[in-house]
Length: 387
Image (cartoon, rainbow, N blue to C red; front, side, top):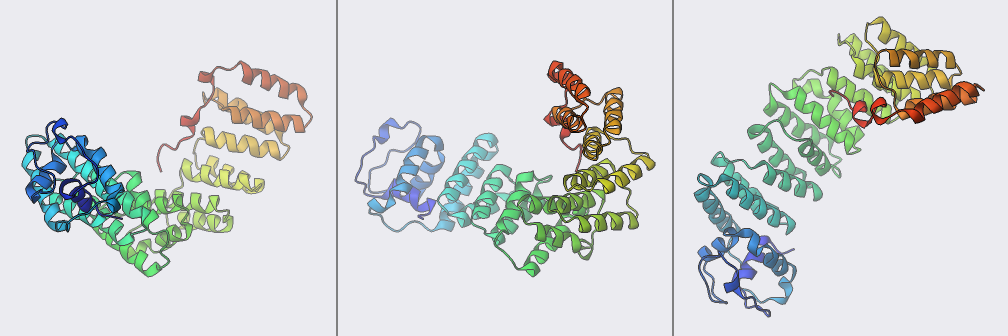
């Protein structure tokens, strides 16, 4: 694909087969004759009223094959000139300068000229000007190309100069490694990030592990976890909870139980998220016996059940045929002012019907149908308070 610098070059330097009434575009500054555009005018036309010419740039870049051009200016020279223009206006108009930079980086990434976008952001960073949105755009573009080297460099800049990072930054970093099977390179990169993130290394590694799991790169997420101590870091409860969730969703229950045991052996105290993760993973595969053991341990440790706990155990007891215990928990749940969800009602109603307790099932059905939205738990109630 033609680079954006060449796209702008075409817009400003070529002999075109179509015509634009340039005088109708206000605010472009100097009027210039078609066929001769010195570099300074070239740069001004990029930066001044950038939004006015963006549609022309798109059209020019998309149709460059139909144009006859001279050689494009050196990319580093163009990036330097754009940088100088942004720097000149940044102090008096930082918001406008950031918008200009964002738009310019977006055009560069869209045209595949990631190296020039990277250079521009480096020049700005060296002047202590960091524009997170532009970095996000470049990081996403690098991820699309599976360019893990570039993604890593961009992520390092953000990690050093701009924290906390958004979840999308971590996800784009993970996406860029999708086609990389070199475990040695992955571990080397992650260790560098852990060193840079100190003293928040564990927090950053937790986010990286979670991002890899979200991108379905489970083996890489587990590899990072297994190597975490070699990075000079110690896992925390959040690390273990994340790994338990990964293993549970993958159906690797034996490994999940093993990690849970090692968590306690290492002196970590499981929290409500730990137990809910175990309960839901075991419930989904029908391990009702283990659900009861986990639930008892949770109660013995003085941890109060929440909505997710009650929902898991009500279904567990209902599926095992112990509808009396399911009803007891349902009543206890409401007494503790924890609102049941429609799913809780439906699960209990279905299991009561299977047990032949139709009157109770119909009574609960009427109760559910007469409940207002404020009486029922919604999607927000199921979100973890922390991870």
